[in-house]
Every structure is written in C-alpha cells, then in structure tokens.
Amino acid sequence: MRVKADKPAESPEGSEPVTRLIGRLREDGFSTEQRVGELDELGEIIFRRQEKIFFARGETVFIFTKVPELNERILRQSSDFVVNTYKARDRTSRALSVMQSTTVYHCLVCPGAQAYNVKLSQYIARGGGATLIPVVFVPEINHVRYPDLEEKIGSIRPRVEYLQYLLGERLVPVNMHRQTVQAFYVSIAVVILLLAAVIASMFVY
Image (tube, rainbow, N blue to C red):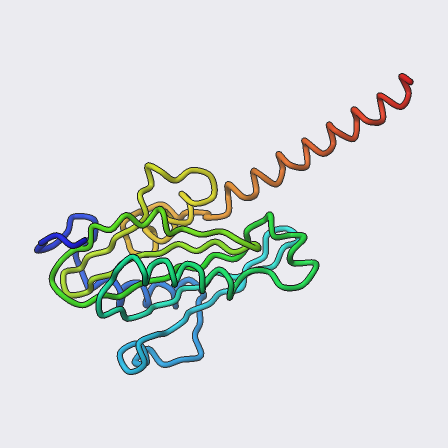
C-alpha cells in the first residue's frame, strides 16, 4: 500500500537515504566486492562486516535490492530466501545460533514519488542464528520505512535503532547486540541455578 507524500518526516534532510547509508557503512567498517554503480546496473549490491559475540562468529549484512513494485509476495519471498541463505550450517555455528550473531538488513529500493505504508514487522524473520530486517527506501522523496518499533522488543529493537543511527536519525551510537549479550548472561545464570538445584537434590536424597 502506498500513500502520497512529498517529504516524509522520518528521514532527515540531506542526501537521499541510500547514498547516505552506503557512505556511513564504509565509515563503520563495512566492505563490498562490488562497485557501487552495480546497484543501478545489476539491481543489487551487498555490504558486509564480520562480527563476534563471545564465542559466536557472524556478520552484519546490508543487501540493497532495486524493486520496481513492492508487494507482499516479494516481501515474503525475500524473507524466506535471506534467512535460508545466511542461517548457520556447521554444527558449531548451529549450537551457538542462540546468539543471533548474523543480522541481515534487506534494503528494498523502490522508484517513484510515493511513500510506502506497508507493515514490515510481520516480515522480520529469525532462523539458524540469522535475523532478517526488511527496510523500504524511496530515494526520490528521501523516504525510509522501518518495521514498527512499538511492536518490537528484545533483540529486534536495537537492530532497527542501529540502522536509524547510521542514517543520522539518532545521535547516540547504538549497540545492536546489547539485548543478545544480556540474554546470554541470563541463560548462564539459569543453567547455573539448575545445576545447583540438581546437585543439592543429590545430597538430600
């Protein structure tokens, strides 16, 4: 669904958001083996950065894909495809998949002068240690559409906030893995308590 808009309020003034984001990705340690011009020529360009959270290794990926016309089928297919592509494959990675150390932002670049009012939260996907977050860009009107933060808690919210920081919509740096780290410590504490309870029960009986 699209609605008419001259300049949506959610995007700051300045260069169009795709160019602005690509510039910030380079500053933040992301790299690509492609030329930036390939987004226009081939319709897709990918930026990556290696990540490590405790013992888990992963990466943060930005996939920019030009989409002539956005619809539910494209969103659903991209969600399934990206998660299947980036989910953990080997035994060790699958064991550490609870850390969700791979984050994939699928940046859907759409033409035109209308803002998309699509509900993106339902297309967020998680599987095998990978988290997919779809984002819609309409460069001509400086429009960016994120998943609704009001509906996202836990590890999704800081990931969306990190993207907003890269786009200049947040001034304070965001650690998108902070909730994951907290959950890791909570899990360790629960395991320790369970082990302590088992050991105590052995002495009792």
